[in-house]
Length: 193
Ligand code: IMP
Image (tube, rainbow, N blue to C red):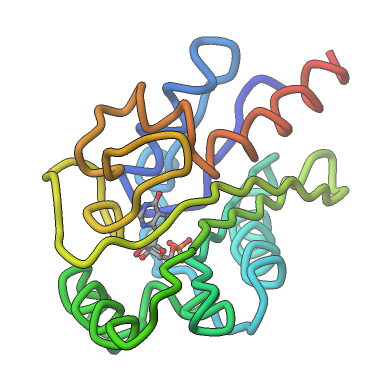
């Protein structure tokens, strides 16, 4: 019950999730589980992609596991890049190219409101449960900070004047979409114990 495989190859996400879970649950990465695959994300909703990832890993391991899919939803871009956030500027999945494309598209708009949304799919004893976390904020015109990953250098969460990339992990986790979704997952798991 306390061992959970986290179906991701993103080491930043693993560190963030471990910081939230502490020692209560043993998060096993795909690498540690000896799984070396690029998990597909072919769907047009975060929920469907999260399900695809956790089901793929369950098929291989037959163990309890969870996955998450996150998108940056920008109001002026009608919720985009959303589920396409990782490959916004192409299949190379370059964080820098994605940010450049985002800033270019947003440039004509006054409204810079954006949010991160995370959906977690947990497969526990072969049943699936979903948890969502949202972080509201805005996009700034120039990169600030070097920490984190993805769109962190241009995202300022509501309640702060720093970008995620100017925060250490503990500070990011005060605001983070992923942290909020993980807290719901933890509360659920604690209720099961
Ligand atoms: P994924 O498909 O869930 O891995 O995430 C999609 C993309 O969203 C990633 O490639 C990142 O560019 C971006 N992303 C997800 N979470 C974060 C975050 O916490 N900060 C900044 N960007 C993120």
